[in-house]
Image 1 (cartoon, rainbow, N blue to C red):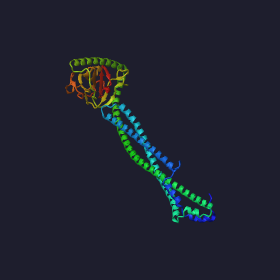
Image 2 (cartoon, one colour):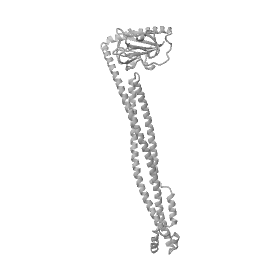
Image 3 (cartoon, one colour):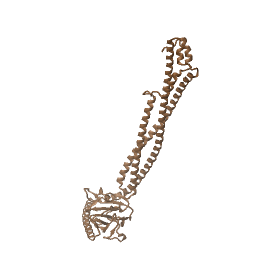
Image 4 (cartoon, rainbow, N blue to C red):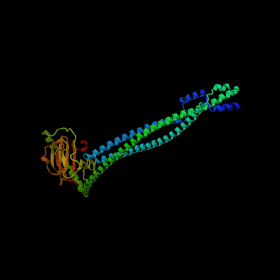
Amino acid sequence: MRRPSTTRARGWFSRSRRRLPLLLVLPLVVGMLGGAGPVAGDELSDAVARQKALSRQIAAQKSKVAQINRLQARVQGEISATKNTLKGINADLAAVRKNIDGMVLQIEEVKAVYTSLVAELARLDGELARLRAEEAVKKAELAERKAILAERIRVAYATDRTSLLELILTAETFTDALAEVSYNLDIAEQDREIAELIRKDAETLVAIQGMMLETRKATDVLRVETAAQKKELDARLVELKEARETLEELENQTQIALAEQKAAYDLLAQNERALRSAIGKSTVAKKNLGSQIAKLIDQQKQRGNIPSQYNGAFEWPMKGSISGEFGCSSYPYYGPGNGCAHFHNGIDIVAPYGTAVKAAGDGTIVYIGWNYADGYDPAWIVVVAHSSNLQTWYAHMQPRYPNGIRAGTSVKTGDVIGYEGNTGNSSGAHLHWMVMLNGNYTNPRLFL
């Protein structure tokens, strides 16, 4: 760039150093207020990109919060259902154990999402601290550039306002005039660049402050949410622990009853030949007893005491621990059935000796007395017919007639029909409850 002649340039420089033509200042100020947008890849573009990324991260964070809320609600519902089952009558402990094992896995899933939320909170805290530091730096840069530009404008107007036209007219030669105008334009371009930097700095600062505000809000919300989720998670862990303890207590009670039964069956199994003979005789005797019961039911039906169909569901006849479920069994005393070498045709319920046994549904007592199908050591049983094809059997009870009930007595659901005992081939006080449908023993749980 050419400069004015030495003599003229010196005189001019002493003046131009103190002032800037109004003609050049006006577009400079306008440039500060408006002007072109930022160049791609600069700080402002970077800040805008980061703002968009932050918005995406916050949206993902909200999605995680919604996810953990769904998981918490599902776990809470299943734990509540499990606790109610354990408080209820005669829970299927194997099924409850399976449910609890499943809930442990679900809680681990909740923990994983919660841990990711805690990590996200820490990341947001770090991002907020970084943004605060970045804001301070950007404020300092903006203040410095504003001060530089303000000083340049102040110098331009602090002295006399020699116009650009005057500079041109007083130039010694046309070449000097061009040089002076060009030099003034160079100075104006530098100020425009400073103004453009100030504009970009101001916009960048606004973007940073916007990110700070959004990050602070997201951090505050997430901090509250993680605290609430921690409280919920701790509550679920306590409830799960209580459910486990209740289950283990019931399982222990069941194991004690099973151990007693096993000891009794082991004694029988010591003489395998005698055991096979006893099973064979018992099977034949039970068939004979079944035929006898069928005749009694037919008699009661003809008298109009038994309906052809039963409408309704059953209730548990007694509350206690389940020591034996319906189905295939490993106990050698049980006879074959339903494709099993040893088949348990009912459910064993263990409770304190003498616990009242109640009718599982409305019906008519068709038999009450000794079950001689058991051989030399019969059990006391009660058989209730609910319809011509549906009966409930209650075995091993105490040999007495509660409330004066007899064969032919009509009973309602919940009426006491006997008391838990230990009669017959029993290894301990319990109730053996059976349901017979169309001449076949059926799982009682299907009717509850």
